[in-house]
Amino acid sequence: MTARTARGAAAATLAAALIAGTAACTNPSADPAAGPGGGDSAVLGIATEPETLSPLLGYGKDGNSKVFDGLLTHDADMKLQPALARSLPEVSADGLTYTYRLRPGVKFSDGTPFTAKDVVFTYRTILDPKTNNASRTELDAIADVAQQGDDTVLFTLKYPYAPFAERTVLPIAPEHIAGRQDVNSGEFATRPVGTGPYVLTGWSKGEKLTFRANPSYWGGEPAVKKLTMAVVKDDDVRATRLRSGELDAAILPPDLAKGFARDKARRTHAATSFDHRSVTLPTAHPVTGDPAVRRALDAAVNRTAMVDKLLEGAGKPAYGPVPADSPWFTAGTERPYDPDKAKKILDDAGWKPGGDGIRSKDGVRASFPLWYTSGDKIRQDHALAFASDAKKAGIEVKTEAGTWEVIEPRMKTDAVLAGGGSPADPDFDQYPLLHSSLAGDGFNNMARYANPAVDRALDDARRSGDPAARKAAYDTVQRELVANPGYVFLTHIDHLYVVADRWEGPSTQVEPHDHGLGAGPWWNIEHWKPKKQ
Image 1 (cartoon, rainbow, N blue to C red):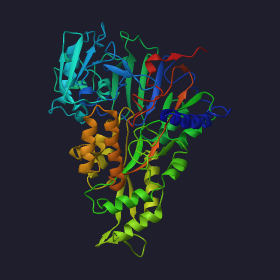
Image 2: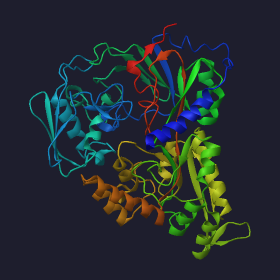
Image 3: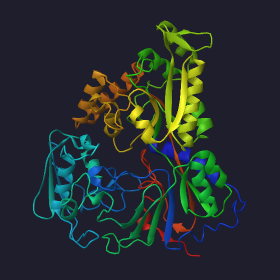
Image 4: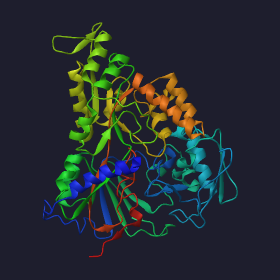
């Protein structure tokens, strides 16, 4: 059984349990078959909204942005397929040149033809240090991008970067619009124009994004004519709005998804993911900066109990950013729940229990705050479970809830219940999470982890075209995380969605951490068709 099949089987089992039952909808007055906006519209409840809709600033970098297309896209099995390119790239024997032939006849939604200059403009702008794109390092391999006529783009790389084609799902922006504005502050970030299946019609920050079908879309006009992404950060509120009929679909944590298990008018879709939940261990804090405390916390957490109780089986224990059933996972780096080992590590390091059971060393109490985002039940539950396990080892964790605006300024010294993960390639997970050059760079390397051996291995893996050499490098990274963890990885979670059963087409892919807007059962909403009544 492959890793993907194993994860899919687990998710399918959970979905079957959630979908089972014959009782009618909890709220008989809500009719999902009608839909809140009519038969050719969909209102989807998501937990987060993007900061920008400009691909030049990072929007849609992993594909599936709806307003835009990349040169390539992912199919249902996460395999690369042509999008704005008419075929997969031609790669030179040395792995340093990628040639893309562009699809003819494609236009932006304003009617302007799409050409190679738009591709060159997009990549060169992102690579410009003056552009505020936190993901610029993901394109580090590019030495040059140039057009050959209107229909061919040539990428030249600095080194053979095995997953480079995966980076070309990045959305393409129109040079004739975005190129005439300030890239960081222009209105393109909130009024984008792309080649994708949908056109943005409105954005009420913190409330909703609305789209209409693009009638001139090169892939054919979507049957879902109006699309609304309702931003509902609180999980309970999202479930209530779904039940009341205000939403056609929503992402929900397992305990809330269960409430729809007996609803015959809605279906639960379970998507396996690389999405992990972890606790950052900031090096600048006197407690979490101690390697002994890090190792002790790594041994103190009961990951299996978190999967069983918090996720109700919808996930797996996490020992690093790579799921244990991935071919990139390093066997032998699993960390079993071992509270006695945690206590011994702390005893040997001089952290002695006080009268209240909380340890101290050299006058420093083994106590630190742990922040999680308000309204996120999965993060809250993980934070509380982590704090409970830590206390048994003699470490006090004070959980705090807040918005990212509150949390971000505190990340240098305070622990955070974080998330991340990408199924495309291990470089996408590990480099931004662990490389010391990105310490404190926005949400990259939030723990400010610095390990020269890890840096060297990440650089070697990124610069190699040899799969065996890359695997050896990532083995080094994962073993180093056992010896000196910068994070305590808790679980990899499966994403659960409840969707009104009135369309043909909803399905799921293996998903990244970022989901809801581009990922989810609506990853292919441009191909949905209304069910015949």
